Amino acid sequence: MTDGIRLQVLGAQVDVVPAGEAIDPLTDSIRHGWRRCLVNAGEAQGTEPTRPDRIAVHLDDPADLADALEDLTHRVTRAAIASGVGRLVMLHAAALAHPTTGRTAVLVGPSGRGKTTATRELARTLGYVSDETAAIDVDGALLPYPKPLSLLGPDGRRPKDTVCPDDLGLAPTPAEARLGALILLDRDPDGPAEPVLEPVPLLDGLLGLAEQSSSLAALDAGLHRLADLAASVGGVRRLRYREAATLLPVVEGLLS
Amino acid sequence: MSGQGDQSDPSGASAVWQRGTWDDLLVDDAGESLVLVGDQVARLSVLGTLLLELLASPRTSTELATLVVERLGEAPPAEVEAALDAALEALAGLGVVRAAES
Image (cartoon, rainbow over all chains, first blue to last red; front, side, top):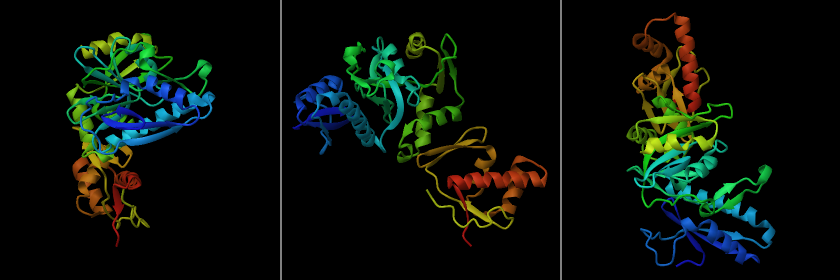
């Protein structure tokens, strides 16, 4: 039992504990935004952790709600990543799954490279696994992180809006997702009008993945594990494109 | 990550070099590699990768120069020395080699 809101993130559980004078709108917003990660009472979620991470979030002034929710997203993400250290390959990436096979495209890139924008386009058709962190176990299974999306307001206004994936019409998160493609995102306003998917030489590809990984050195033979994952999906690919709206046929084709 | 040891004269012909530490090393078919040291990943040239292999035992710069020429082919001695110094300096910067303590 928990006195907070229990979330399942990257296979771990986190208790979010709201407090403050504005606890009601805060609680409602967290429950709504994180609904795909909620652990419902009595719901079987695998092994019960002995002590889930506990994240307190305080809000007195409802006007600060957006700030509180954005900060919470960062903290939950850090807790989720910490839970996978030494166990999971974790990449700064969006992950989208074929709705019937569960084969999942992992779109790797740093902040600002277009992961969330690509997610909003692709997840109209492909299952939403994550727009932030792709966590892959030793067997190639992805642990979902269907967090709310953090979207800049009009004219780049901050704090970002924290938006439930359901409100954006994103396709359901699959029960099982398996690695199907590793793709380095290369969005360029001057890039090709039609997306170009190209193979990347081994070391270049692994370097691109490693630069966007978390705690790779905590894994046993982390580079070799990345190499094994890449080999299992035919190598790393680079996707050069201009507009995310053009990506679906290419990504869908890779997963078919 | 290891320290770099005493490198008061790391490029001198008499300097003895040895391996430092790293978390993983992956070598491709062409002899280049990636090395993982903590949160840092670096790409190593054929020469850098070869030096890590040769330093399975501590060696002097002179010994390394001889072995590098044997493995990679002849080159003017000054070029070999310059390339070796540059490669060792880069590897030491990563902490994957260090000057042996006397």
